[in-house]
Amino acid sequence: MMEKTPGCSEALYYTCESCRLRFPSLESLKRCPACGGGLRFFLSRPLEKDGPKERKLLEPSCVGVLENLRSAWNVGSIFRTAEAAGLSHLYLCGITPAGDHPAVAKTALGAEEVLPWSHHPNALELTRRLQKEGFFLLALETEGSRPWHPGLELPEQPLALVVGNELCGVDPEVLSLCDLVLQLPMRGYKRSLNVAVAFGVLALWLSARRSIPR
Image (cartoon, rainbow, N blue to C red; front, side, top):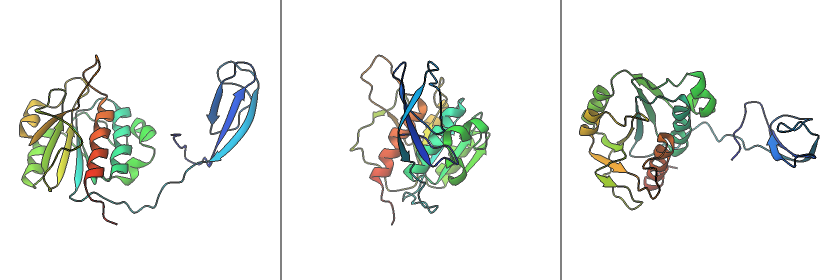
């Protein structure tokens, strides 16, 4: 999927006459970005427009808790996924970059302006509050108490999806508060996914499982 740049309305496709590179661009080009050779333009395609400003939120509501994430790129990617999946709020905790950070905006591509967010210095205090408000706390970890599978049943109550620091994982005291700790099944040598990818798997699964009002 091509990511849109504000102000661009179409994608332009080129091939290089020298190195045969075939690629899209959002601006008119004369020279190949790889070898500097001449280009042949062969196709333009209109870019998809954003949908209506009114969002269809999940019911019961779902929120995301990002606990001490380091990477603004990851935060921006999670913003895009959470907004598309119908989450109602992102809680950015500890050292997690804020939604108005320039690097977050670069990967969120406008989702940070649509999806409400707030910053909280202490994730433990926040999760305690959410628990008192009736949220089911679901955490993702590399060593969860249960493996995730698509048929997993969850209670029909508001849900908070908790992900933690890219290297250290979720704060142990926050983890102890969670009602369920899931791990994504891994078949490879690496035992974990990028936090934004892992969040996306669960967020889109929740979106499919929960009713979206029309």
